[in-house]
Length: 639
Image 1 (cartoon, rainbow, N blue to C red):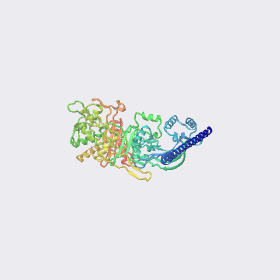
Image 2: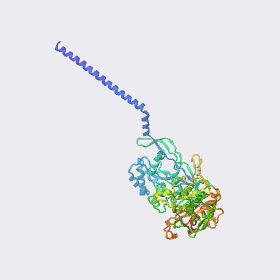
Image 3: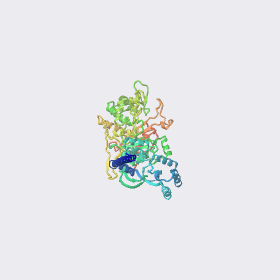
Image 4: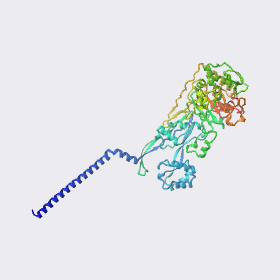
């Protein structure tokens, strides 16, 4: 084969190889394209079909927002429908960071040229703004006056993102009256957040700024709060609302009726006056709280939108402790107010009878001891039976009785009357009190018990600590001869939509039983003698009324007096003066009211507390027509 032929042949083979390579590469590229296209189709199918629901939901969540709609808080009324807590319109100046076009500092500076904005208001705004989303309006000034609204209305066009908004603000039209029973609402703080999280009800407080802090507002928060609603809106990429889609309206909180009678409440507050102390009144047939007074008090409206530092400091540092709810949290020696219950313990154990007597010569001595436990009447009462022991409040009778009963049996018996233990009232925060026992002293003081402490426990001293609420419940149980109800302040709830009333269920106590019915009558007769007997410690209040009051005075010692010393009020600081008690019910034969008055460092139960109790009882008995007028006295009349 010639050279040219070979060359041509090689060229033909080379061309065939190139064509083969080209075909192979083209096929590979086509396969690659097909594979990629198939993968793309598969991925598109996965995204469009398999993951459609997921990404549709994510897309909607970016585009569609749920805006919480807070419910309206329920109103609070007294038993007769008088408004105690309501919601009133309030106009606030707010800044929404999402909509502003200049720094907030500049905005606040401009606003300050138009209306007064305090440093406290600025600090409050900055504190709230730090924990609030950009889309939420934050108040820079609350409760604008009409003049401020007019000034802002003609100037706000100059500022983006600043507007006047309206909202409902909690208001207490009775101001200081019944504040310790009502409580108040305030802004949700860190401790409230912890409680909300512990109850796992965060969804009910998504946009709520206030919560019940004390009293009925806190105790019945779940009833008053209502249920959150939601509004579904469509937003753009910057979060601005384009259109509103649908709403689930909030359910307003239920209205509540308290058992309080605001007429009696006002009278009780008036008669207590400037005294530091408490007055509490029950309907003994139902356990309903009719009056609930603790002094000093304060204005709950100060707390609704944030109390000023000055106002809070003045209240918090007040030595008279206006925040202390003395009715159910103040713990004091009950003094002689618990002698009726101790007498019942002695009757039940057979240690005394209605006619058995004790000789009172003005002091009592334990066997083998030279120490003298003094009676409030230095020269004594002579021979004293059950009736006279209550009428004259003879300490010697009860020294001897307590010693013979024994401390543990005696306190165990008195616990049936809610003395030294909670009554179970439906308000949160009730104190326990203290029942004196060797176990208590050992646990708290790591000391042994002495017989002398049993003796003084018989007149409501020793380690006894009770609240006015407990003393009133103990008296109620006597008034009802052992059958009573757990005290409560919630009378009924009302559905705001249907106006349907639902009464609160009465809860009876475990009845206190005595072996002979005449024991109740014997004790009640003695309590009637306290007010209407010729020797009664509170006989001065028994005049000018046409019904019988059964009562018991008490003067609880605050500072110990040396063995041979005489009580000298003038030589003692006021904080060391005796506490004054009086507890009573009326009419004695069929009681409709039980009242306990406690005056802190008031000196005399019969001289100071008893006249105040008469004013409250007479107001109730007379239908609030003509309060009794009892001359005040500063005489320390023993009990």
